[in-house]
Every structure is written in C-alpha cells, then in structure tokens.
Image 1 (tube, rainbow, N blue to C red):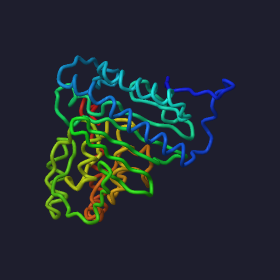
Image 2 (image 1 turned 30 degrees about the vertical axis):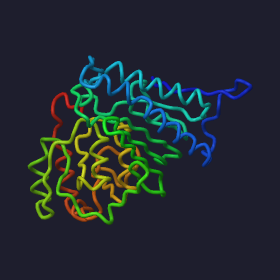
Image 3 (image 1 turned 180 degrees about the vertical axis):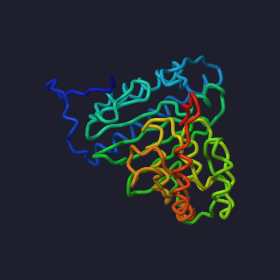
Length: 290
C-alpha cells in the first residue's frame, strides 16, 4: 500500500497527475518544499537525542517525529494546492507503481543518528518527472544548511554554487564498515582512506558534493529510492560522477553505485569488476542501513 496527497480542481475532479510539469509549477513546488523542511527544523532539533523509537518491518527504526514531519509536508503541499503527489518513507509507496510526476521525501534521513543526537541526520526530497530526478533538496537542520540541485542547472549550498571540477580530490571516502579494508587497498593509488558512512545517505552525499569526501560507495545498500535519488542528483549537478556498479546506466532507482569526485571516476571504472565482487558478497544479517 502506498499513500500520497490527492488534489482536486474546483469541480472536485481528481487531478490528472500525468500532466506536464511546467517551469512555474516546478519552481513553486521547490520553494514550498524548501520552506516546509526549514519549518520542521525546530521540532526535529528539540527531539534529537531525546526520543523513543520502534522498529519497522524491515528492522529500521522509526519515531513519531518521522511520521509527523512527513504528514506536515503533505499537508503544506495540499494547503498550497500544488498538484504534485507526495510519497514518503513512512507512508510507503510502490516504486514500480508511481505516476509520471511526484515527490519522494525522507522526513528524517539517518533516524539512528537522530535518536542518538548525532548531527548528521537530514531531511531530503526528490522531484521525479518522466523517470528522471529533476530537482533535489537536502537540508541539515543541525547546521541550517540547505543543499539544492536542479537537473542541468547546477547544485548549491545555501545559494552558493558547488563545483567539484575546481576542487582537489579529498582522500576521505564513505562506505560500510565491512568494505573499508578492501576499498582502501583497491584505491591506494589515489590515497583514499575509507571510513564508515554516517547513518542515512544524505550526509555522505552532501560531503561529496562539497568536496569534503572523495566518494560514497553505495554497496550493500539497504535503503530505498528516496534514500539515494536526492543525493545522487546533488553530486552529479555539483560536477561529480555517478558510476553504477550493477546496472548498465544510472537511473533514479539505482541503489548500487559510487558517487564520486570527477578525478576518481576512471579509477572507479577500472575497478568495477572488483566492486561487483564486493557487492556480490552475502549481506550481514539484519542489515538495514542506507
């Protein structure tokens, strides 16, 4: 079952969500999403490190705040009358049964970090249109930093353009703990030093887009489309590269990939078969982290 906002016109007819996405509608939707993510920051921060959680069916934790924030996003879109369905992690959705245009939101990405009060949790959203991520918003409420990207128009940090092509390659890389030794050896020529990625996908993608990390290795990904689509667009629009490990090409549904600095691309592609072998290893029991 999946839940989304439904919108109606003045005659109470259900909106046709297959309609084209106009630049005006897109701009308004992005503005509302940025606004509502910031509006939720005080509530999120007041509960960080001081909240109870339960486990979902997949074993990942969820808090009441996750649910409240997601519902507030949907309510804000309904209040503005924006005719784009909003699908969220907590409400659920079937990624193979989605309309032509929709938002995917993760109200609190990195719930484990949120529960512990570690300031690497984020709020993320991706606007998907005709099978492509057209816009992405990643917000860190702890630092009040908003990362935005629009396909073909660049990536920004609080309004300032991000451009990896003019930045040196950072030696830091993020991956799951079990892959650190293997990846350090594979990429020793580039001097990469891998470390365990923070809970949730958003923070690592932010660091790659800023040039503070050279790569995020998305191997044994236990997350969903909303965990990766926003950060992937952010990195690519910042001048970074997305190298799929298992798929022939990257799509917004791709889970196994490397998001990296452009200076690392050829080395990643050179080791693609080794990365496939790492991906093929049995997953740890109970693995859920993004």
